[in-house]
Image (tube, rainbow, N blue to C red; front, top):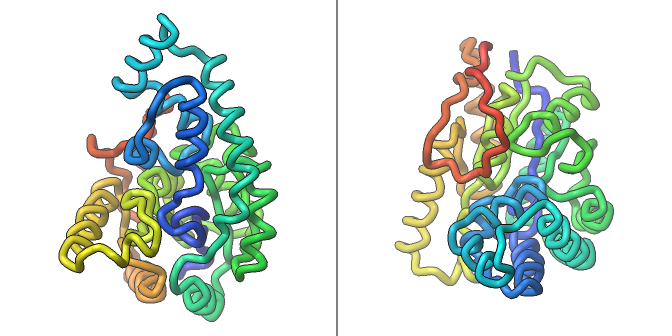
Length: 289
């Protein structure tokens, strides 16, 4: 057996270094309600459906306390809808500007195509956002065979439905012949829940949450320590491989293919308390592969 397909995440992986587009949108939405939310807290839940993201932010102690102080009550589903409407509109208006490719994307795509892999994608963005992002990304060189947004399945990440839709469209199976690459813990959990291989990409990730210029401006020692810390988070979330940037993707895919040739399959799903993905009321049993 060998790899047949790769499924890319979008923001923080192939475009929008640091996954910065949602930050100002979420902060503006909460500020409209008199609540300040830090970029660090927003990045904690990156990768999931944006409505779930808002709900997760509202559950944070400081945010919940601020809401209680401002409105003399706890937040409810109507509040989530109101915040989501504000944030979504801003992201729809600004997401195309974030379609700047991450470093080494062109080289990585060339290597993937040379290997003969089908190319799919999943995202925490919704379809209105993707309708703006996809054409802009295509102009900049990223044009996957298939994409699906988080509002086009019953539940977004960490549920595996978007990955299964990719496999169905690309006509690729079994799961062990598929690999997912992403920049969030939700990406890794999504891959684990689908029974496919998982690769985390560190430097451009929302876990670091810096622009490319900000990241490069960090002292070398601090930069390396940050990448090591994020790599550990990916590994603890269940990543089978962690790369610094897309220049290392070709080698990571080669190593997975070598494991497949030896008869190895993606290790069983493991749960770790360090995962910061919002809970969705579902804990899958270990995958039997």
